[in-house]
Figure 1 (cartoon, rainbow, N blue to C red):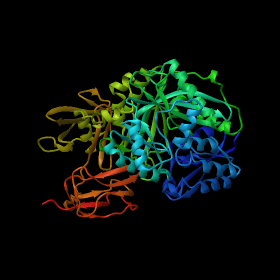
Figure 2 (tube, helix red, strand yellow):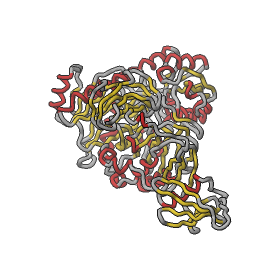
Figure 3 (spheres, helix red, strand yellow):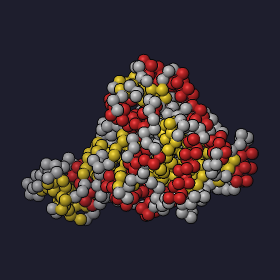
Amino acid sequence: MLETLLIANRGEIACRVIETARAMGIETVAVYSDADAGARHVALADRAVRIGAAASAESYLRGDRIIMAALETGADAIHPGYGFLSENADFVSAVEASGLIFVGPSADAIRAMGLKDKAKALMAEVGVPVVRGYHGADQKPGRLEVEAAEVGYPVLIKAVAGGGGKGMRRVDGPDDFIDALESAKAEARRAFGNDAVLIEKYVAKPRHIEVQIFGDGTHVVHLFERDCSLQRRHQKVIEEAPAPGMTQDVREAMCAAAVRAAEAVAYKGAGTVEFIVDASDGLRADRFWFMEMNTRLQVEHSVTEAITGVDLVEWQLRVAGGEAMPLAQKDLAVRGHAIEARIYAEDAEAGFLPSVGTLEHMVFPQDARVDTGVVEGDAISPYYDPMIAKLTVHGADRDAALRAMARALDDTEVAGTVTNIGFLGRLVAHPGFQTGDVDTGIIDRDGAWLVTPDAMSDEAKAVAAMTALGLSGAVLQGFSLWTPLSYFVGVGEDIVRVTPMSGGADVEVAGQLLRLSWCDGAWRVDGAKLRLKAVRVPGAVHVFGPGGGVIALADPLARGDAARAGAILAPMPGQVTRVLVNANAKVMEGDVLAVLEAMKMEHRLLAARDGVVAEVLVRVGDQVDAGAELVRLEEET
């Protein structure tokens, strides 16, 4: 058994590992950057070591500093979590050379699966089906263009290193190929230091189904499959286990292929074998193909734990400590259905733009599993992934799990930053998702509906107005000599009139008069209890519950700046990775002027109108603050 464990990660996965290690009686050591000095994972650990500045390259990606921290604190082993150094074979070698245990697979296994082209070749050798494409070493644009035509459009360009959708582009025709290739290579170069790509045939109705495997270096078992088809920008949003529509013959074929894949590299620890599935004719045993293997624990491992009753982190720590595999294949079974939703600080309506801000108010449901690395009062940092939490629910069947997830999202309250909670609620209610008819294109096809916030109800507007005036709870009564005093509050496009009365208020919204009162800790309209709760934070009021929403509170001291009307501004702190225009260039509305990389994502900054570039204020490589001017257009005549 391990005695002391260092967790080389941050956020919710660091907290997750610490909680299991603590339950096993293992002492834990956290590492942290300057931005995370007060983070939740630091508070949970028995000890914590600073490893550098806020930027990942100066802290969480510094393997040498992490190993030194482990040695100085007397740790036996290092758990990498996921992301950062979790799939870095050189880091694994360095850990083991220092006399420490790496909680995960061998460096050889990581290398074998680390490059998609070589992994696909290996899989073909051991009888795992692979999708048709070009995986060659010749990376000349002309050769790749020819190969794409040979494969047949539409195709996917994919970086051979890394994952998470970085360096991936769908191309529907030859006219778009070169531009997509340059963009994919540039993104892959920045993310992985390797701009090599491969070409694959794009599957018409693709589903992303992956199999959780676990090995001890000799034997491998599977813990069944997960469906991760609901994605935006190739990033998973909602995952579930088991996969809807899965039949026993397809499960046996897919899980057997996953076990063969893991055994081919003598896999040790937790890993995931990902398959692309053609769902145009349902799930079939001859229509799934190997996509890649993630040689680490996955974000969505919680749904597998829910349906199997297994603690995968405990398995990792026991096997790393020299113990045998906890269970054999015959001992594993599927129990019920589980769904996970990832809550991010991001604006779905603005193209899933990550948001920063302080978590002024945060409440999670009691009847769901919550994995989080933040607490109320924390700030969302521009340096790392903007995930706030993962919600996982479990039910006797898929219908029960769907109902539980809808309730859990309704009961989740986060204020102080923009979140995707409303988007997740609409996605769970999507007719295709409800029936299990899913594929990776749902969000792209139905994005306009999914990202558009639901209209606030009149009751929610009334509650928002009362909260904005500070009249929640002990309601104040206005006073005048002849008639009650009224207040006016702007709620979206409506002007809400609030007239405090004894025990409550008369609230006029869009011509409708509502008698609002506060009783037993809840709002009521004409005596009927509302499932609404409101919270006022700096600059806004958040109303939670059916028909809820957010209203911005006007700052009376704020003034518009007409001179900046033609400025293209950085939406958040980040690094300029591409500048596509020069001074005096003519641009059209929607043209890409520059590209900013921030919060692990690439953001294209577009011209808001036709015009002429007056000045380019940044260069490639510049670090900019939120609100910084990047490009300025000439004033309109």
